Amino acid sequence: MNVWLPLESNPEVLSNYMGKLGVSPLWNIVDIYGMDDELLDMVPKPVKSLIFLFPCSKAHEEFRAKEDEELKGKSIEHPKSLFFTRQFVHNACGTIALIHAVLNNPEIEIEKGSVLQKYLEDAKDLSPDARGELLNKNAEFKATHEENAQQGQTATPNIDDAVYHHFIAFVHVDGTLYELDGRKNFPIAHGPTTPDTLLKDSIKVCKKFIELDPSEVRFTLLGLVPTQ
Image 1 (cartoon, one colour):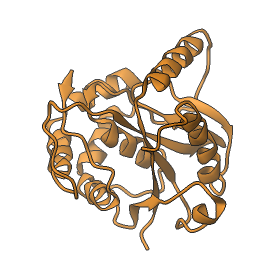
Image 2 (cartoon, helix red, strand yellow):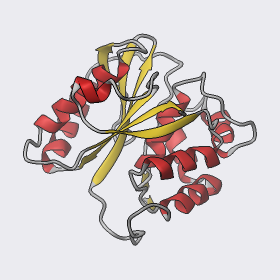
Image 3 (spheres, helix red, strand yellow):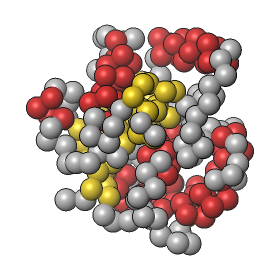
């Protein structure tokens, strides 16, 4: 498996990265400072995606394996408009979370000829596995990712350093809340949602993640929102 430098969960770095990928400057990434209603109400609206960063603990890995096994036995259809890609590049989860967040919101403008627009054009008719392999081979995407991985407030990690945190995205597609995680074989549907309730509905799912590891505190919440 190819290895990229890990991205820092820094809103400024991630917003800059989106711009270099071709996402309109009318949208950016912001910190979400807590799960209480009062703090959630302070987040700029509309929230187009919640991006969640969490530790890959033993409890989470066991849950992921069990969930995947259960879903393999079911025949679940997802909307054709749902864009989901697998992750076949180590440390690419931040990039994949941004891909899922942006490409499942078609009203977010992407510059023609940009890195992300060209990836979408090549990937839109492929399977999730083929989309993941396409990203794996995309030298322009990798270069843009690694340029931004070297920015931020913390020291740039060595490419061989162990990384224990993982980014995923929550989006609203056709009235359903989807958890999109490139390490999983399938999109995960979490019931009905609306553009107005996406944030709080996503938080309910994040709380279940946290309940798997009640002693863990290293969780980060980020929102894809209009630029203020």
